[in-house]
Image 1 (tube, rainbow, N blue to C red):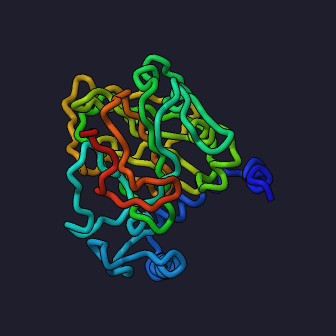
Image 2: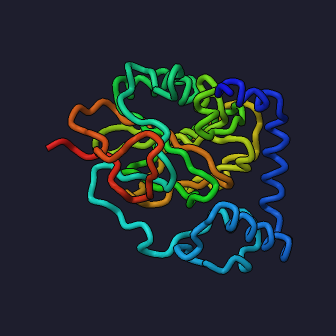
Length: 283
């Protein structure tokens, strides 16, 4: 079956209603019922609770508490690199931005302007720059950390679809990451601006940042924009910046820099871990 045919049912599903319901269930504190759900999830996805700060499944009051669990100190040592990997997961795609076009999958590209919610002036800063798209599966740690130090400038909540973001859907839905609901976080780093985009998906109940808390819900159906130029919100490399309540994808944009190169071990579909070297300066 082709990927386009495989994703056809997603166009028909009531994705918004399913996601709202999943978020409601995941937030409920239902004692033994919640513990049973978490135990089944851990078995189904082979979640490594030994590395969790709190490995006691029965102590989590809600599924969301479990899903956004913290790691033990030292579980993810930080590499010495210009950019470190901000999440656990798998590489979807990475590489150069061709003028303003980001590669999604064979036969599919989307524009940086569409990704950031229609702001062409913001997007233009990343013409011919670099991008990385990282997929978080259900078994992964679901907090997002900073690839490098940065000062927060802006956050935009862009309404959109709620397609799945798994590899099959990425190959089958044109412009997937610029169509789905997303939270665009704009930072200024030592070498210029960079963007982290938290992309929502079917069953992703909400996304949150450390400076704002829950961004969605609510889902008012229109673009929401916050600016932080008058505040001094700075996050260091490796520091937590946000989290998914049920997993999804992170897309990063960096400006043109001919001296910066992705790690030679990086390959599409390859596994990644928070803190490992993502890109460094050519020597």
